[in-house]
Image 1 (spheres, helix red, strand yellow):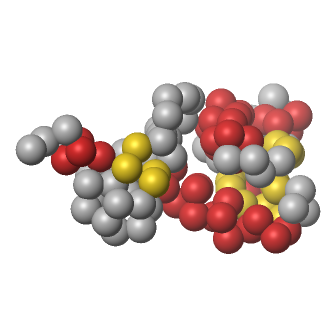
Image 2 (cartoon, protein in one colour; image 1 turned 30 degrees about the vertical axis):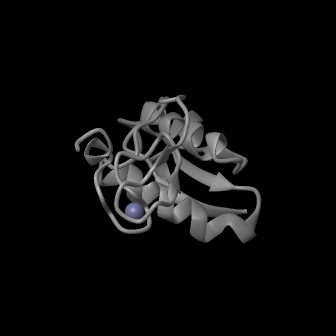
Length: 112
Ligand SMILES: [Zn+2]
């Protein structure tokens, strides 16, 4: 198990867990139960919900997804089909608004 994300709140943790799940990375959320005890406990990383992945081999992929999520490149819950990057031709999963390989914006796809 490796920790890949410290969430601001349980909803945030679930969002990230949902994204990882969509990409086939099984994960679990820890510390949710401590959330209700906030107020009595100091606000540290120990009392924030955290997301952990089961497969350490997917750590780098998970961290990359978290980074994409934090930068707003990755949109949770978008379930449509992959798109092809207009710049480099890479197939990009639907959750990304920008090509993960070259950074080109998806919206360029429909422009001529
Ligand atoms: Zn590209």
